[in-house]
Amino acid sequence: MLKGSDSEHGAEAALALASVTGCNQGADQAMEAGALLPLVALVEDPAADAEGRRNAARALGHVARSSEAARKRLDGAGATIALAKALMDTELDTHARAAAAEALDNLARGTQPHGDERRMQAIADTGCLPALVALLGAPDRHSREVAAAATYALAYSETPRRNSLREAGAPDALKAAAAQGGSAAWWASQSLARIDAEAAAQAA
Image (cartoon, rainbow, N blue to C red):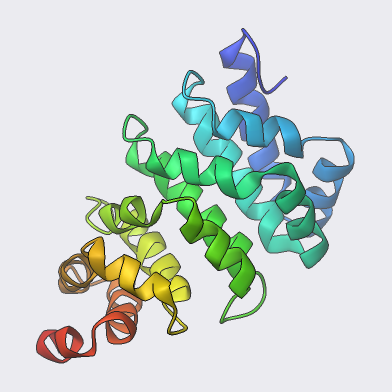
């Protein structure tokens, strides 16, 4: 059970699915078992256990990474909107929001380094870009890396998304993330070069 009155069991089920879906075979099994809709419902439920929502996002991210067929099923299940809601939920802890951002990145990027333009625009249309930019300032390195990688994908092409990211304060947030060093620094600097070349030159 992933959703309902027993939040403890829902969180446990989400944790199990986050583990099982780590391989493609497990992701396929989860889909065939009908897990996608309950996972989507859990990840967007503001009343649900935060750990359960984080693990639901992790499971959805694993499924999104597995195949294009899986990503199409996630599209049909409403995963993009649900994950965006989790990312924008300021009551949710940083790790859960980062899991949602990573799942969105996997959904949009798939196996292509430049991503799926239609899905990337669908993510932007949810209004979650300011929340993604805010995640660049997370205290932990992993969350910053996830946010910077997702920003890189969304800013890859010269589209209105770049302006939306600029308006959300991405240049300053990316400069700050790059200055923190670590694995997030590369993604942040590359993202900055796409969004604001002048700011990237100053940060170099």
